[in-house]
Length: 417
Image (tube, rainbow, N blue to C red):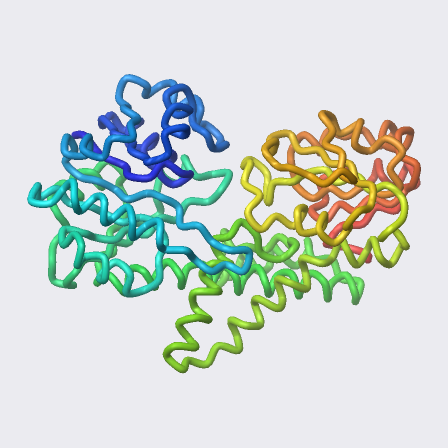
């Protein structure tokens, strides 16, 4: 079976690699010639196992800018990630352009197409006016675990034009390579299902952050409470119960924005969802509030360890680190991240090649990404290099006992502060 992927951003690279690993031939098409040239050698996104998978499946993959290559395929997935603004608003122009180009190429071929890019309800049905052999499939990739989730999906959520319609035979054949339960529904239901998933995740994140903050205030230990919640089947073993600094990564924020836009259009009460947005904004400012309380805003040197919005990815979409840098203005800041490289900084920010360079003579150190590299930081070395003693470690990456033994003012989200 030969499978086409139109759009070679994160979504397209991951799903095409997973498809090739299952023994199918893949044709990866993108209008960005520079990206296609890069993909001839290696993936352009950072995901555990992706580079190895790319090398392993080299003979099964063709990367090209030529959309007519998709005529060689039995099925085509539209896998261009939808650009979003900082507030989560989607720009669907890119998807509309791709569908228009695809329709021109595939017209009359009978080749089925499946839209995987995340869109608002009603979008896919509107796009069927350009190409009527179009279905929708929900993707539930997670940055830092994307390839694994593509290879081993929890379930398949698929939207079709009419509920009673069956899946196209080629779509069904592709799905058989990724065994999981199927949920087939009309297009709008599948589109809204993706939004629903992320809103329930937003509820879990927002509730966890508020409870963890209250635990700190009343002297409770959030870590003691978490096992009791995981033991409750209504909440479950996989619930998001680790405190964090609000929402990041772009996907959940996009769906919050989509819901609020749709709620306004259809006069739906949205106070609960609005509260998730406000909760995220509040918890994202935790580090800034700690720095301000200690007089470190506008004075001294601050070291920021980690720019990615979470470990095992180079994605900085809605990264709390970059937001913090904006608030620090022209203050002297040193930054380090083991993967993120392609960001430009103002002259007041120095990019360092090692964490030791970043923390040298720093008045405060902030660990903004829970990279495993930072868990290996030696507290004695850190004490020797730093000028100050304030270490903000929201996710508890550093060894708390070692930090205490070296007289650090060590603050994490699960206690103090």
